[in-house]
Image 1 (cartoon, rainbow, N blue to C red):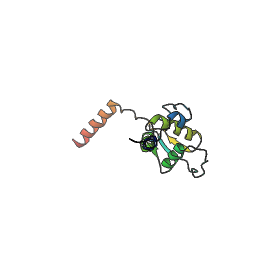
Image 2 (cartoon, rainbow, N blue to C red; image 1 turned 135 degrees about the horizontal axis):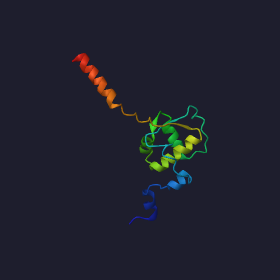
Image 3 (cartoon, one colour; image 1 turned 90 degrees about the vertical axis):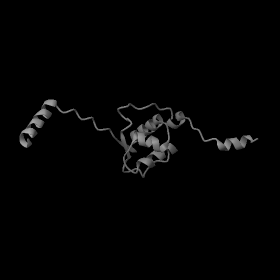
Image 4 (cartoon, rainbow, N blue to C red; image 1 turned 180 degrees about the vertical axis):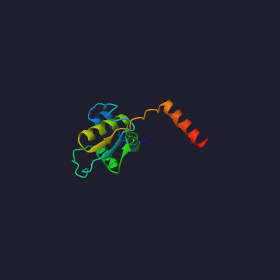
Length: 125
């Protein structure tokens, strides 16, 4: 049989998401969707030491260039909601810059496409 101390060393550390997020709620989907791109600001080298280890980890990850929210969650292996909350807090603090996803292009008018097709047929047979 194993003692209590041996079992304790085999269990992974567990920190509740509420503690990591400091009780903050989820940001709006418009603010941070899965495909929103995130990067660290140019002056990320002058970080305060009051950031949590998770926030420091996110800043280190984002300092390499633009990553989507989904990619960041995958790299950190934190729940998506926790990552969104931390990213929103870092963005509000001025440590991160977000770039919203590009709006979906509108569909082309069918009549215009038919005119182009008829013009191409007339010119090239």
